[in-house]
Image (cartoon, rainbow, N blue to C red; front, side, top):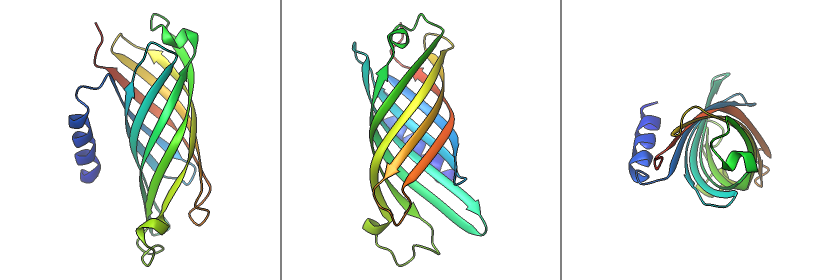
Length: 168
């Protein structure tokens, strides 16, 4: 847990001039716990660019499974979501992800490249605008991975809090 906090604090320090930061937490179907930090580059168009890092971890049946990964996505905002005077908004995103799995008993002889997987990610999310700066986000994310030895699909559902740094 200390490692996660250190990584989050380092990432927040790197992105202090960012426009929007989002901290997210959720559950996967494995079942595993999911935590993520995401930077969003806002534009005047209904497209926004996001870059995020995530961590999954599970302790089931004496296995200690963990995944660390990054994702780059394009968010497609609805016309209502582009105007934050609305109370609620819906949007979707599509992009790329890369992750590395770690399970000391199963993957102890596997190289780094064999434990890593590249894939596609898509998500649907709803936003509830609490204030001009804070937004509560619920999300459902599906990943399709290309390394079939580690599994093809990941489904994550959860909640996040977004903070807009450049609100006036």
